[in-house]
Image 1 (cartoon, rainbow, N blue to C red):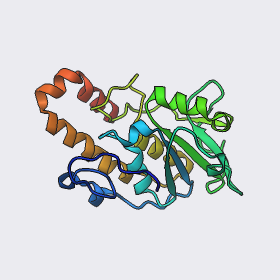
Image 2 (image 1 turned 120 degrees about the horizontal axis):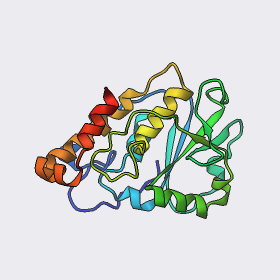
Image 3 (image 1 turned 30 degrees about the horizontal axis):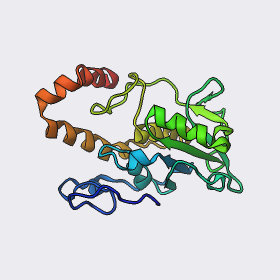
Image 4 (image 1 turned 135 degrees about the horizontal axis):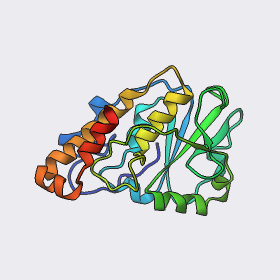
Length: 213
C-alpha cells in the first residue's frame, strides 16, 4: 500500500494512521474477497482524520491503495481482469447479480475522495474516465454521521466497497469491514461531545436509525 503518512503531530499507528490510543488495527478483518479492489485516493483524503479508504484496503486481502492526482493506467489494465469504475453516471450499470463478469474477472476501481475531488480525479485521468462504470443499488443511508454528505445515499469509501462486494462476491458478506469504521465514527462523536455533535449534524442519528430499521 503506497500512501505516505503526512499527518504529523501525535504518535500514530504506522498501519492505520490513527493516534496510538485510538488504533483501529484490532478491529480490522482480513477478508478473502474474490473481486480485487483498487482504491485511488485523492491527496486531500490521506490527510483527513476520518478517511476510510485506508480501512477498506487494510481489511481486504485483495486490495491496493494508491494516492495521487494522476495515475498510470497500468494500475488497472491487468491481464485477465476487466476494470470497472465504481462511480455513478448516466452510463453506469447498476450492480446486480447475473449482469456482471464472474468474480475474479472484474477489477473494482474505487475513487477515495469527496464528490468534488472524485470528479476532479476522473477529469484529470482520461483513461480512468473511459472505464465502464458501475453504480451501487439503492440501499439504507450511510453511517458516516460525522462528515457532511450531499444526500442520505452518499456513502463513505469503506461502506461503498463493502456494499459492492456484497453483490459481486455473493453470497459472501463483508459486514466485518465496517467494524473499524463504526468505531471511528463513534469515537469522533464522543470526542466532540453530544451538544457539538447535535448542533453540527442535526438529524444524523435519526437517519442512521431509519436506515437500520
